[in-house]
Length: 116
Image (cartoon, one colour):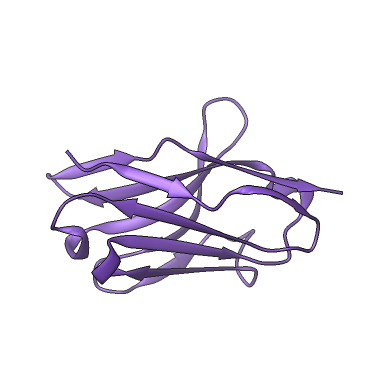
């Protein structure tokens, strides 16, 4: 029911920055917990950052201090500001929207590539 569209990925040199966006459809965005995950080896999705409906923010251990998550409920949009990017950040990133018993949706994924 909820459709998620990611944007802002691409190619950047090591040490550079990108800003990912995830825009959701519908009228209940402010009620949802939102998060960013990234593709690991195999079929694994690893937690990057989350921002709950009440404003609580959590970061994965490997990105804390480099990435900043935020949301603008008036735009139905969540953001991930990524600074000091490293080649090991090269992966597909996924947007997630969650509310218990109501929605658990994923975006299509967006590629981030960091060159040496």
